[in-house]
Length: 154
Image (cartoon, rainbow, N blue to C red; front, top):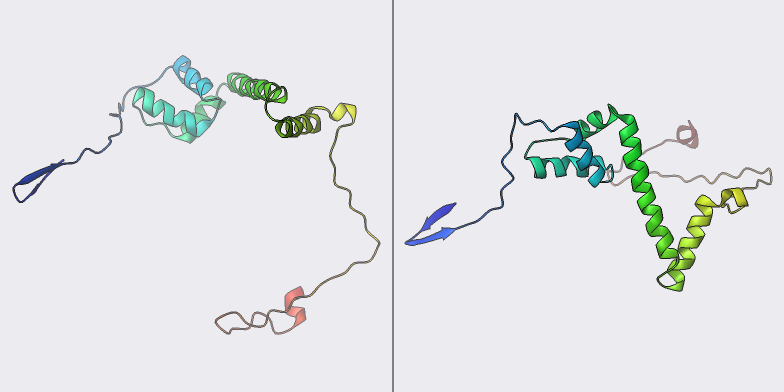
């Protein structure tokens, strides 16, 4: 875009989106290749399709199309989990001692449950039930929120 300012011409280069091809349809093979390259992440796949093929594709459109082939979608997502596990395992053997300890602890909590490595929260009650009541009389407008404790407990 050019603008005239006095006798000087200023040229501004603005980034443009790829030219959209409204009638272009990608094949299932092309679609699932892009989905796989993006680890089954729907919004990321939609952006990649628009960038690679120049067609508008929403996240919802990706989800709808992927769900028509649930076996392929599950396979892609399982492969992404496999990749993440490979990285996790390799980090267990490298890096700082603190990182290794955190990763081993995480791995055992998630994968070692069958061997007794679990984390749980235990809550105990003494049988007494205590209620702390907080009275709010006014907000900044000065309008009372409740006239009595009964109004708060309802």
